[in-house]
Amino acid sequence: MSGKIKSRIAANADSSGSVSCDERILRDCHQLYIDADSGLVAVAQSVGVTLLAPRKKITVMLMGNHSAGKSSFINWYVEEHIQRTGVAIETQGFSFVTSGRKRESLTGNATLHLYPHFKPLHELKGVSEYLGTEICTSRQKRFSLVTFVDSPGLVDGDMKYPFDVDQAIMWLGELCDLILVFFDPMGQALCKRTLNIVEKLNEKHGDRLRFYLSKADEAGGESDRQRVMMQIVQELCKRPGLNKCGFDMPTIYVPNPNKPSRCVNQIEEACRTIEKTINQTVQNTLNSLEKDCELITKAIGDTLSHDRQTSVENRRARCKGCVLALLGFSVPFMLMAALVLGSLSRELLEMALGHDGIEALSLYLTPVVRVFDSMSVEYQLYSCGGLIFLSFILLILARFSFRTRPTLSGRQKRQLQEKLDYVQEVVKTKKKKLYEEYLRQSVGDQDMD
Image (cartoon, rainbow, N blue to C red; front, side, top):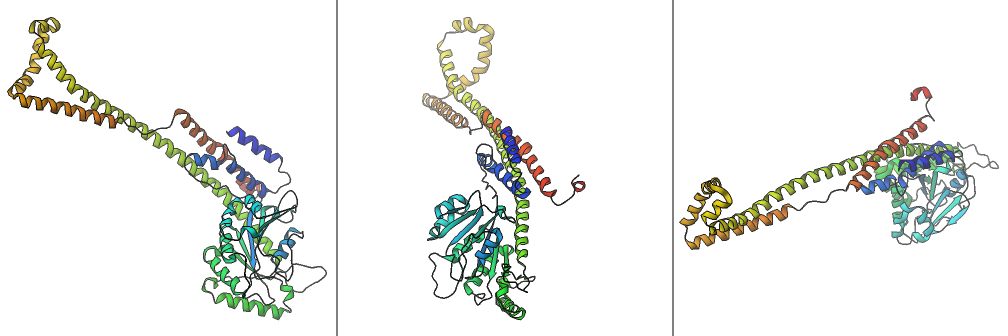
């Protein structure tokens, strides 16, 4: 088992020259989970533990009002024109944007196959028909580690969506690592639908929300931008869940060399937020790997310990059953022996047992014979029936006592021990090396000693 994994890890290391350290760590961790024979998911399942393989990329959802610049931000980040942009509502469904080997567009069913953890979206009426994935070859910034989810533009009024957009965004918010909320300063920033969804998301995932004033260069002068930001902040502060200290809303816009602006552009702040989320995800993945190893180790240890305890109880049950069976068979045997001995003459018994044997037999059986002779014939029959019934009860108890619980075979115990050794020696060692590799990006070698 361990040899196969070690060779696969070595092959990954040889082919990873063109990928970043974080990407390689997430990929290797993912591989440790998904291997069909010796992956942690399969190992955990064999001992009754359910694990989920970590994702190789973070998921960043962009939400906001109609024409807030969500698609434009994605195009700027990947440095390719992937998403359609414009004043009209271009994004009517959910569009996943991710990096891959070649440019490709996927429909709803293909999207759900590519992202199996999003398959429950199929249960939301109408959503699957409005799912799509755009795959591009860009490796700009940290795009190789990011999957963007471009959500429909939110508007108030009579606008009807082909599905429950509020419920879909709330559901996606449960799985996304980061949620970027874009407020457009051109009249739609105070969209009630947007604010309502943001307030609900903040109740459970406030740490994932980041707010930005998009298209800040189109808000006019500095005083106009300040006034728009004041209005947005006032509206947010009216909602108890969003009224918190340290509220920040950087001004961002997609830079255009043909249209210079004096507005402070903090779009790089959004990039740093994404990068920080990636770093945190790498740490969380490595920490989860260690916890899952401990969970599997404990489960295998408990399974082996329970099997040993069961084996001890089974031996006790067999011993108890043997004693009860011996007692159950001894009663009718004694009755038959007494009947046979009573029918034989004294001369024949002396020939068979000898004089000393006859004396010993008389010593033990005389009290029993006297008690039996003192009874009437009717009571003698009752006594014999009672002894036979007692024998029957003892044999039934012996039958039930012989029932044992199943235990692991020798092969199964060897397999569990191999899995335990694999987790302890291979996976934990690999996790330690990955953590050291991650830390060496930031600290010096002298701090790692």
